[in-house]
Image (cartoon, rainbow, N blue to C red; front, side, top):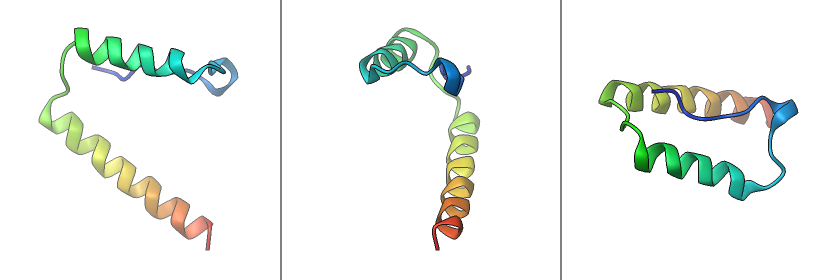
Length: 56
C-alpha cells in the first residue's frame, strides 16, 4: 500500500487536506505490513542522518 502524497508543485496549502487524506487512507484502507513499516523506518533514519550531516 502506498502512502497518499503529492508532488511539491501540487502540495495543498491546507494541512488539513493532507491529514484528512492520510486519516481516510489508514482508517479505511489496508494497514501497512511489518516489512513496509520497517522499510519506512529505515528510510526515515537515512534521511535523518543525511539532514543532520547537511545542517552541521
